[in-house]
Length: 447
View: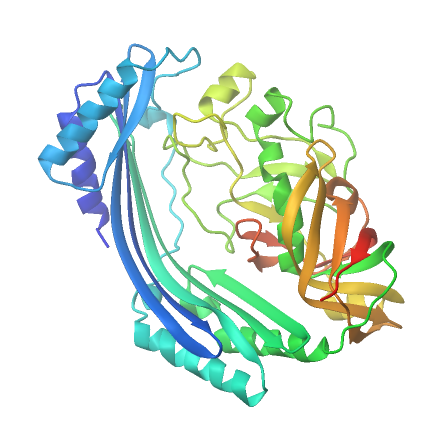
């Protein structure tokens, strides 16, 4: 993995070689390795290293990018020249601002998300863990499949107005699905710190879910109380993330159009965008090198603030929040570090307080039906349980749901502490488990 000094030197060379009026260079270096297993056997181990150097040129109010994966002077010169030539053939961008200057960035902020123990993980280390998991699956007569990955990512951004920003972080992820005849269980976790995930514990959780959901029952669909584990909350609430963008509201593409400042969710819902939260990950600066702010998006159930890029903020007469996406783009900005505050309950307490309901491990194949009311449809998967009399009594066949996220977050009765959650439909966020009344199930499946 290249060091900060090495990436800075590459960026400085690009800036010297460019003939554009303004130049921005974004450099990403990645090193990733993944061990994949299925049928209780490792069947794939892959590793990848890459270096991407993206040059953005500004010429006469026009802008464009060109990219190379080589760092010699000839390749950098060609990329800079290609970006400038492409920019000349673009239409003028009426909202294009001068690039951010170093003085506008504020005091530099760093977040510690790089762990040597993660980068030091070898294929043998991952294989040893996976072998233990598969052995346990065989002992319990389960069929296990999943991935175990480790890697590192470094990002540097510099421009001809004096900006230089750098961030490096590691990442580890473990995901497992345990099959058990007519049932299945699932668990997943990701963290910058390899020691922050516990593969054996996750495997036990998935296998226990598979065992507890054997011989699943059917129930009549309808509006039913649900207890959502964090992964299920993530993959539903995650559909809101772009609705908090200033561009989405300005273009009338947000579910919060005409709802800003109004009571939309329950008063127990608080949502932030906070890259500095200890359970979050990612760089503390945006695609233009501007520092990200911690933004309180929803206060006591009322959407109050949006996030803005520099250009969107000027257009909407607001203050930039450091959430701009790399230019050029059509999206403007997005909050990439959502944090939903939790409560003092727990899954066990929620189950105990439920006379009749459904416990959901996760959801999948979720699609948006109505973007303005945020109605989603999807399926339950890998651990759906019937709760009666304050305890889990049986597994259930999976069900299809049709639910508005806006309504769902207005019917939250209990929440546990917020955790870093990983799912399949949204990027990792910090969310709590929650109990929601009148969740709308529309039909049962045959599996």
